[in-house]
Length: 263
Image (cartoon, rainbow, N blue to C red; front, side, top):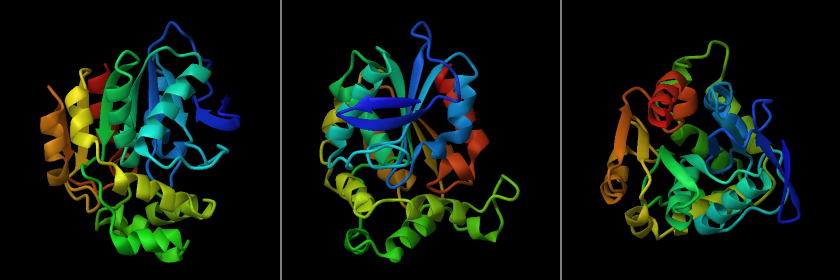
């Protein structure tokens, strides 16, 4: 589905289903340097089980035009404009990594429009190393390699993919290779600079779920503990075998947690 937001064409995956204002909605927000396809299994399931689904390509990512946005707050407000463009008044917001901070900020800034939030592979603060930031700023291949290797559990290169024939490292690298120069750096800097996490978490009044990978090297479960405590009534599901890329490494367990949460 193509939308027009801020004068740019934006793509949102709906699993080929027409949106129905009478149905509840779910917006899926990807992480740094990625796109809507990261949510392939999860978004398709909900689209075929009674939900309006918008798996968004953020500005400058995937099939969406425009420049990447510089802050988590700006991205959260943009997600609300995406709901406006799709004529959806309310939705749950499910975000991965950078997208989890966007989902958090959506709930804090727009409480009347956000029904639930699910934070997948989340942490606060979400600091990025100087070496990673510099490599991304210079558009070096090393930045893509860092995101790919750190973004998966150690067993991934050893043939641990639950989907036969799918190469998780190659899949991630192919997505990153399509990025315009500067996009990955903008995303990583937005994560690194985001300072409002605990303040915004205390404002959240909707149900919240954190889905974490026990073997996550980028956002280890311990780094999400303060965030979970700050969100009133939040629940946490930890997936033992997964690293940071939970939707690919543990697709069924991630989907099961979302099905239980979104009902």
